[in-house]
Image 1: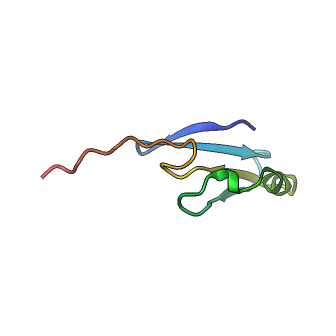
Image 2: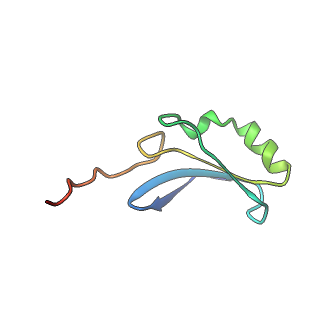
Amino acid sequence: MAERIVEANGAELCTEAFGDPADPPILLIMGTGASMLWWEEGFCRLLANGGRFVIRYDHRYTGRSVTPIASPPSP
């Protein structure tokens, strides 16, 4: 599947999914500061071929994910 941008709570996160959305999902979370590409595509496809819907994503400020700079809190 192709990458897509998902907006969540003001952050735009880049995601990529593999497999059938009807299958049980697995969300692959890489350590902070690491791109979703650290989850190798072959590994994602292997999980998907085993009957899972696999989603990998870039954390905020990582890879292709973007988060606008927040305003300072109001007093």
